Amino acid sequence: MPGEEGRPFHMVTPLLESAALSRAAGTKVYMKLENTQPSGSFKIRGIGYFCQQVARRGCQHLVCSSGGNAGLATAYAARKLGIPATVIVPGSTPPLVVRKLEEQRAEVEVFGKVWDDANDRALALAEKDGWVNVHPFDHPFVWKGHSSLAQELRDCLEAKPGVVVLSVGGGGLLAGVVSGLQKVGWRDVPIVAVETRGADSYSAALQAGHLATLPEITSVATCLGAKTVAQRALDCASEWPIISHVLEDVEAVAAVEHFLDDERMLVEPACGASLALLYSGHLQQLQAEGRLCRPLPGPVVVIVCGGSGIQLEGLRALKSRLGMP
Image 1 (cartoon, rainbow, N blue to C red):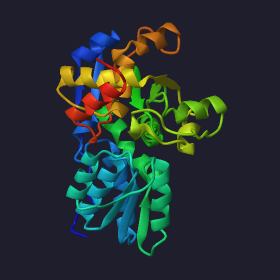
Image 2 (image 1 turned 90 degrees about the vertical axis):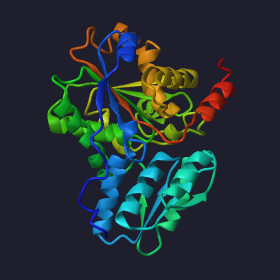
Image 3 (image 1 turned 90 degrees about the horizontal axis):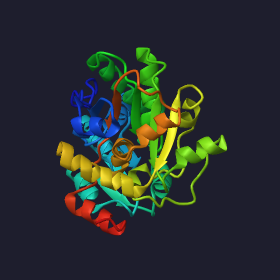
Image 4 (image 1 turned 180 degrees about the vertical axis):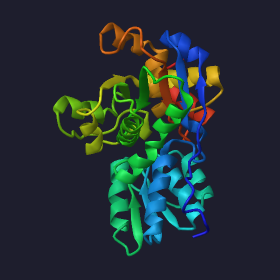
């Protein structure tokens, strides 16, 4: 390996106060800009760490099932490590993502309609000698890598947050942030876990009291499109003050557009979901319901998880599909 197995592949991302989001939420809001990571999203934290660990143990080929961002993180880490990578993407994956994967020298295979189909294919390929499956969200190495986010917050903030807002797909980011907050001693900081309707497998699991599998993914936030979340994400709800909140696709896409106007950054609807919690008044709704303190004892931190699968043309197409002006 060309000397890259020791240093983390992720970077310490900016933590910036947002005047626009603060105005919308009625309280101070900081953005943790994971969209500035080398692979375009927070995924490089956990997946980069995972890839380094298995490389040390003799992995000869990485395989990952992904709607985009996990695959990009795997491809980036594999290139740095000098290991070949195959990324299995579902048919819903934008051509833009396929092109970016190929630019990172990954072999790309399109398989199935949704991530779960692609995952079945990746697991089959990982039976080959020397091949290792990189699960996008369900592995302790992935959670440990993501936990680095909390230490960065601890290093940058003068006081602990009043709440952390993040989007949930398979639950890897949630599990990592809970672990990180535990490590830095912020044990009473609540997390609002945001999903879009039609990709709300975490909310379904919490309501059922056990893992629940959605019949299909109908949300446009395809990067939140795991039909079943990780068991660890569900377990976190019994260990941590987690508030699950589901909002609509229209709100997530509108938040993407607002964020582009306000902060000059374009993110995916999966990221727009957590931004919409602030733009659309849901934070104040949770306070009115008594589920969050009013006033909050500290600032809001929203994790801008990023996403590389969107361009302006794609944003316009999403708005048209949802009947938005």
